[in-house]
Image 1 (cartoon, rainbow, N blue to C red):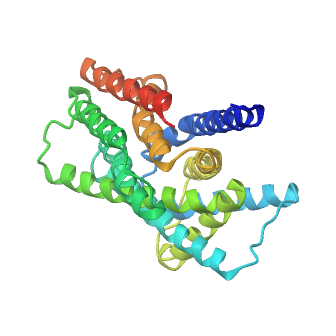
Image 2: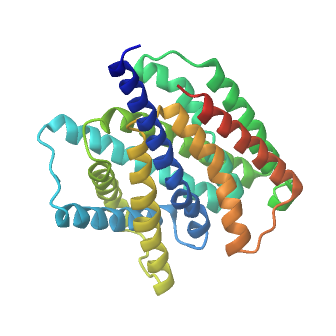
Amino acid sequence: MNDRSMSDINGTAVSYRNGIISVLVALPFVSLTGLFGKFLSHSPLLIVQGRTVFAFGALLLALLVLRKKVIFSHYREWLRLILCGIILAVHWIAFFKSIQVSTVAIGLLTFASYPLFTTFLEPIFFHEKLSKRNVSAVLIVICGLALMATSPSDNSGSILSGSVIQGVLWGLGGGLGFALLTLLNRGHVRHHSPLLLTCWQNGFAAMVLLPWSLSESWVLTTADWTLLFVLGVVCTVGGHALLINGLRNVRAQTASMLIAGLEPVCAIVFALFLLGEVPSLQTLLGGILIVSTTVFMITRSE
């Protein structure tokens, strides 16, 4: 093997490692979403409208200050961004709706099903071979999530109650939306800045929701505005920009496994320190199963 081949291999390894790091750094920001979102008693539509407006404003200001590109030259780029914005809005509404009609645990854990959608949709989008290892890993993660979801500490023992079923269905809808968004961004991020994509996706999400959100009651307290600011600027700008950046060098399946496998675990850790919620042994066992599977996927991914 010549020096050039070795250099290419090393460069690919470094790029993959940087992509993994970017996705992992996004985790704390993404994990905070459910915790802060549950303190907002307003409708999911209003929450998402406020979040996307704050995110779009912060990102557009950052791009202008940094003198970066803010306009796309081809109409197809704009059409793709509009589509991503619509999917992003629907995904977030379904996510917050799931939390409001059931619990944060159900909302997060059912949303974490999105790697299952990604694993089977990615070969269709990019004509890639479906990995048996990824399918097996998804099934193991689902087992870990099931352990966590049925933990006594979650107060969700009545699995067949109407609110739980609604929460699961809304959560699965949010998971499907996020899987589609991840796949669309994977093809887009290779040619454009993650900040630029995140900016306009939030901008179009805000524009699409505006006609409906105008009918909402916008009587918000200072605490409500603060939480919306945190959701829009910290969780959205920080988390999703880093996630999109990671997709430059990491397959969507792998990124999905990382986020879906570790986000509930991170959320439990945040709940322990911020809310004083102590996880049960069953929750910890589910978390260990998820983390070990995720670590295996990272070390074995191509």
